[in-house]
Structure formats: structure tokens, C-alpha cells
Length: 173
Image 1: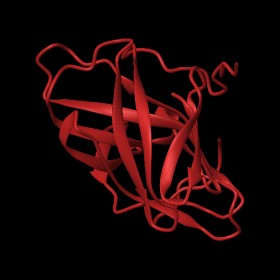
Image 2: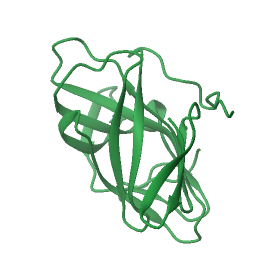
Image 3: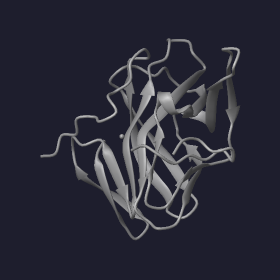
Image 4: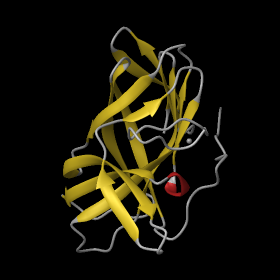
């Protein structure tokens, strides 16, 4: 399934593996870049590198998988790298103009996954960056879900012009 008019989406499937224990999330492996939080799996969060003086940036998540039977919604995100993190959607109009708008949430229907990669149109807008996003750097963020609650992740900064493959290579040692 693709984007829905309510700002949600369901469809496709993207640091360290995590498992939820009570309300804490702990690492499972050093090189993997996916996070487990109860029935949610956050697969490959990444951000596009920014120019040195940029005041905003953009971050993506290759996939958010929901193993619960009921819908969950990403309702907000926070990170010390930016003053504000907004949930955004961009779409191209019939006349070829790209428009971006803030959305109140991004839905992940029960038993499905949501693609928050570049091609999906959904992303996290990082406003008032506190430092440039440099290729290879990592920064922490907290994704706040309606049902699952807060999930701590790390975004890896990738070159601005490229996106990691839809099925990233996950190292598991």
C-alpha cells in the first residue's frame, strides 16, 4: 500500500540492534543498523550530509516494521542535533512542482511496514542544526510512537546524493 490522505502510510520495509526491556532499549550488536522495540523494528535510519553552513537537514528510515496486529503511529521525533525535528511529506504535483508539508503522524498499519526512504516522500526535517551533518557521523534521536512509546536510535550520515540500498547490508557478529 502507498501513502494515505491522513498523512499515514503503510507498505515497504532500514546502529545497533536493540530490544525493548520494560521501557529501556538496549543494544544487541555493534555493527547492525536496525533497532527492535517490542513489536516495532526500525531498519536503517540515515540522514543526508549537509553543506557546512546549512541550518536544516533531512533524515530517513528505510523501513519501520510493525509486528503488532494494531496500527501504531510515529507522532514526533527529537534529537540533540537540531532544535526541531518535524515529520514531513513531499510530493510532486501534476505540473512537476515538488511541495513539502508537515504531517501530524506517519501510520504503520498492524502487520505491515512503512517506507520512510527518499522515494516514499516521508522524512524527518531537522531544523536549526547545531552542527553540520558530515558523512560517516552518527547522531542520536528519539522516535516517539503512539503505542510503542519512545525508541532511541542513531542516524548514520550518508552522502546527500545517494541513498543506501532498500535492503541494507546488516553486519551481525
